[in-house]
Length: 185
Image 1 (cartoon, rainbow, N blue to C red):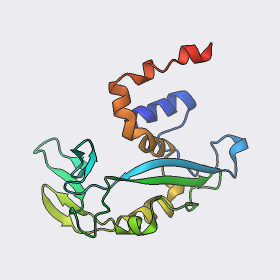
Image 2 (cartoon, rainbow, N blue to C red; image 1 turned 90 degrees about the horizontal axis):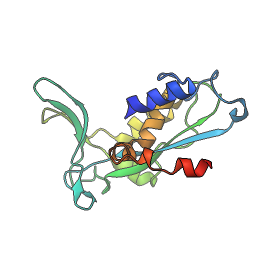
Image 3 (cartoon, rainbow, N blue to C red; image 1 turned 90 degrees about the vertical axis):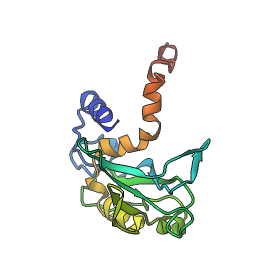
Image 4 (cartoon, helix red, strand yellow; image 1 turned 120 degrees about the vertical axis):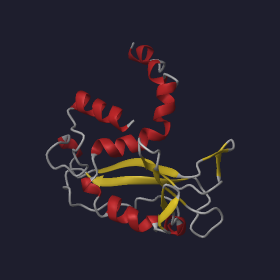
């Protein structure tokens, strides 16, 4: 999905895949100084928390090897204080257009209540073995998406915003059935 979004941005608007949200050189001049919000979801799975119609997301696969089928994942134990009782949390990237790559986020990345954002602490596993236990997501979010938000690529933040529905939309060919021809006439 990210590859598709990067291609669309590059071919449609000349936005390179690595162009950061904090760019000082490539933006519409009318937007300078305005707040840019890109909403997304942070996946926060537990062992068996129901998400939708009995479908669970027991873990997030960050990386999977082609040979040997080994994976690097994260999840929190069901019912533990490290779990937030939800499969996803609302989140956002927030930058001031044209303020540079070194800017910090205007708003917190996690949009849920502070106590929920601070609670999620999953364990990281490789090939089924814990390699790092109870890493607090809030501190990871702060470092990556608040203190360094200006460095996050535009296309990556946009892809994460639409990725939750993107694959399903492609599979159902929704792009071809939006009635764009009717809207343009």
